[in-house]
Image 1 (cartoon, helix red, strand yellow):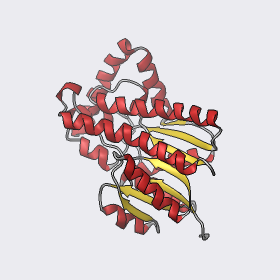
Image 2: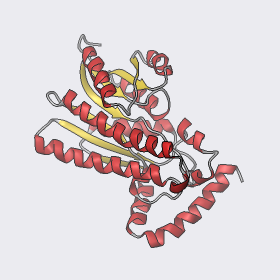
Image 3: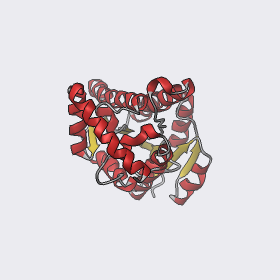
Length: 264
């Protein structure tokens, strides 16, 4: 590693997509700085030869502190906003605290992280990678609040790229929209009946490592949005255009997912 390495920041990286992505970025030669609210991030960062920082993605000042620590290690070249939460349930039944947590972590955490990343990379360039979701493309009964935040992340990212282009900053913004994958986040939601649609994929949950491969591949080009798998994105976007037809279809998908969720 050179005396002034490139640094990749990954939020929500103690496990799941964040940890898988961080491992791939370390393999590409970046010094990885992993953040999470869980102190376990320090130990897992050590296994990658990186740096672990306990930080809360909801707090813009925490992002700024992380950026300063990253800059002290080298040139910040990649910033991945991965931290997120998922709460299944009908929108009107969510506790107020869960609604606020979902919106603040999933949306404001990405907005704050992206803004700080742009400031860190505006002079020398880099990549901002935001982890959205397949749910960003269309209606997802049972996950309405979560889906709303991910749709906002997708729109924010594409709009951000437009702003970067207009400003002439050498930064590329990317959004990855994966379907449900075998992560702790999804496993934790399994006990909630309204999570059934997450398990509607005929081939089962995606492999988290394969999703991380798709995420990191975005850094090799100018593509702004990638959905995994692509055919599910087509279905979801069609559902957004014609919800009158799509919602009954989604109800049938939910029923199929319920059987898989419960092992029935």
